[in-house]
Amino acid sequence: MTKYQIHGGNPLHRTIQISGAKNAAVAIIPAALLVDGTCRIENIPQISDVTLILQILQELGADVRTVNRTTVDVDCSRVRNRQVPYELARKIRASYYLVGALLGRFGWAEVPLPGGCDLGGRPIDQHIKGFVAMGAEVEVRNGLIYAQVPDRGRLTGGQVYLDMVSVGATMNIMLAAVLASGMTVIENAAKEPHIVDLANFLNSMGADIMGAGTDVIKIRGVERLRGGAYSIIPDQIEAGTYMAAVAAAGGEVLIQNVIPKHLDCITAKLVEMGVEVEERDDAVLVRRNGPLNRVNVKTMPYPGFPTDMQPQIAAVLCLARGTSVLIEGVWDNRYRYVDEFRRMGARIQVDGKVAVIEGVGGLTGAPVHACDLRAGAAMVIAGLAAQGVTEIDGIHHIERGYETLVEKLSGVGADIRVIFVPDEESQSQVG
Image (cartoon, rainbow, N blue to C red; front, side, top):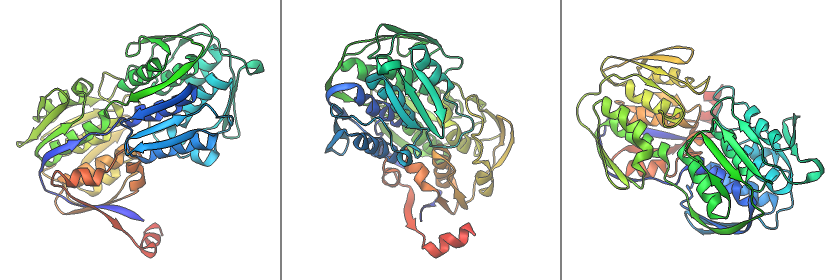
């Protein structure tokens, strides 16, 4: 078993480079199934979720060639298998994008229900609603999603109103619609940057998508998509995580390869807390020397404060003067990390979707567990700010979404390393 070991209390300085966006990459890579020819996808993050989705494509028969550390060529023209491997799909939430892509190309898909982080109820009913509106028959049984067009023909354009703003459903319906016959309209669509990135990727390959980034997206189906090259946007959540780390630990860090506009909702809250954020063309300079002020935060769909930044901002609020209120407006089960923060001296009370955080003078290092991807990132932030040693297990969750996290943080002055725990010790901890 491996852990992160952090000796906290060191302010952060110098520069961090942000990688490509995880949430864009895990949709754009399956979108290559729709393309007749080779897609060169650039600025891919080196994370386990991307490795898994590429492996799934290879299992389906795609030709995947690594060009360099951040670039792959994907050719799905010879894909014939539409049955996604069960064990691989169960490890990643984004495997559900394979339903839309396979259904759009072949008129038939068989995909295991997805895995990923346990954040409470994450139903796929809105995805299914969109597929059915385009003429598909969908059934979920024995842990599998079966979707097909009668006679395995072509989907037809449809009108889809999402009952709730859903990033996954918006992107999945887009994937299914690009090769459909006629116009598909998605109303109450999500607006996140990675939705715009997926639309830009598909349009660069010959799709006809309008309105991405607004709440109404129109997709006019085309006969085929052609190969091409595309570079994925920078990761908004990775950038926000390092901004929160500077806010918690103190110091001054230039965070490069970002789109500052995508960070506005995060920047606004940090500035309200007393953190200095200076926007540049493709970077933000984050500085914190003085005390942190209490703030109230509610997570909301974009352009609101992102739910994927909720645990990280909670780590910062633990160190603020006064009492802050944090409201989770998206998921039902996003406070499982609270007991881990309490081990470090945090004062947090949770009632449903509301967390009341009473700021403390400082946190102290402790053994903690990363229960999911973003909670794990929050444990790292808390460990950087804490006095003493913090050891974090469950780091495979963190590596699903953060490329070379240890190296990036070490490069700005953090005392963080990966340690290996002998099997006997890890077994005794489980017992």
